[in-house]
Image 1 (tube, rainbow, N blue to C red):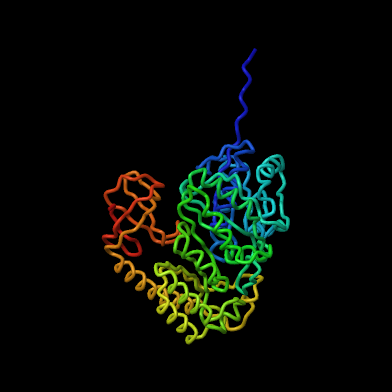
Image 2 (cartoon, rainbow, N blue to C red):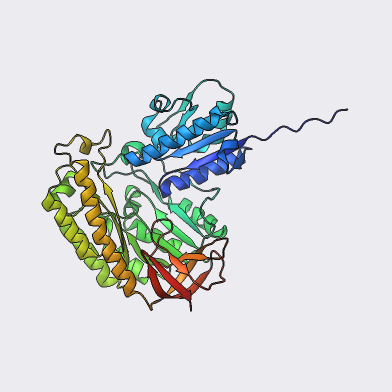
Length: 448
């Protein structure tokens, strides 16, 4: 009797784009794909199916997603790839319009169908027609447990909520992701324990605004209380709080951070601007006085706090004087890290329809001037640290044995790094180091 031919297992190539929240979604989809019986391959050109998890927040993110779709379709035309499936935020935002923008994609999958991706792949494979799988974002926050990790084993993102209620006039997130929904604490703690059991020594807490955690559940000081529970996980070493509006930072939270042995003294506080009129037109809940007060309060109570922020230049109507106000504030605040973006008039947002749109040339000039000022601040801070001793987490070891790592004031994949000389530690190890030099934004360190 002839030996039966073994059926070929179908392969999936996955392109993960976007922010840390998107990374969590990508890891969940990858887990579903693997559990669905598919083999995941790194070379997408030889995959049977390509899945792209897109970002759709601002114009550059959309351009990157469109480029990835076009590349996937070009792979399909070569004959190996059978289907191209587009998921994520841009899929939720654009829907079936994506079929017109990129000819050759086979399915568009919205955020509400994230956990159905394996079954969707099977359905798309059995059809010759383009398909959409679009529903409103789920009423409750997603359960992000069981992830196929694409970050290093020793650190992970832990998402604590979905959506946003702030309705900033420049932002598409509420329209894409829906209202703010806190994830139940028991699910967060179970997910955190799962991540730590899999080797994560550092958890980075993420949401659209982490300071809002628990408000929809009528929990006062929800983030601080949640952090207190997360601290109890034995093998967790570092707990990092990201994406926190100034309006949500109160004395209770500051004291929680100050007295904690695991919450690192680092906060990511996106302010976007400092001028009150611009803040009002942005529909931000903060004011100039509040922002100044929060920074002064943090630094007076946590002397070694490291602060990162994000600002926007070229918002409609921003005058030279208002930009100078922002520039002077940045020079005063001396943030340890700062991201600056030009305003993009995103379709469907109130700011896109505002009068007095700023010319692109002016936006670019303002961005350059502000970032040069921030560069001077960062370089001076780095040089002042020479001789300081720090605890460093090893992130990577390359083929030549060169090691890169981070101290508590450097978030993974966002901030600068520590370049480590004469070291034999493995990725995931904590070592004590001394700063001996700087290289642009990075620190050069050696083991003590």
